[in-house]
Length: 256
Image (cartoon, rainbow, N blue to C red; front, side, top):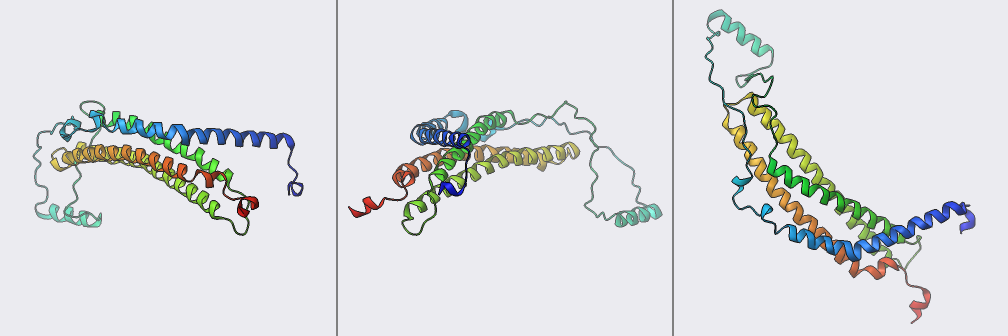
């Protein structure tokens, strides 16, 4: 079959060396790295910093003071009031159209993020990235073990394909955790901007506290899911390692 496609010997040697390197690395990941990592994450889940019962401990002060109210004269009397109302309707505004306070600079300097959550996130992000990278390596290994397409005797191949699908799913879920962290920062930034513009509205301040608490809980769940994914992958691959490495039995094996 190789005569149908001419492959340079030097390139073939390098590709074979790549396959051997991926195989050695992937087998070490499954046999050693995955079990060590799941135990490490299980220990991390018992850390007091991520088992806070009183969520008030992770709250962050919003250093934006409420300014004194400014009394404005009523400009909506008589004819001018009618003109103002007409302009409002023409501009598409309604009764709930509130301009808020113009913000040119934060009085206390830069508005800091929640330091407790930033520290937690910086510990979790490398773990997410590691899972994605290791899953990609193991997935490549299994894909390289898939034999050529033939009729019949494909039960082992189906196990390989199921393994690849599971690894791909884990990769996608781990990537979604990074998106979740980005959405948290964006949502919180928008709310803090609202507080700066509408400092008298207490609900905005409470909402920031609520999303901080929600993110803390979500991060703990993410760590738990990372551990569970290592457990699942390690168990699944070990149970099916024979079919993954030798998906098709030889004719000799079938006779006995």
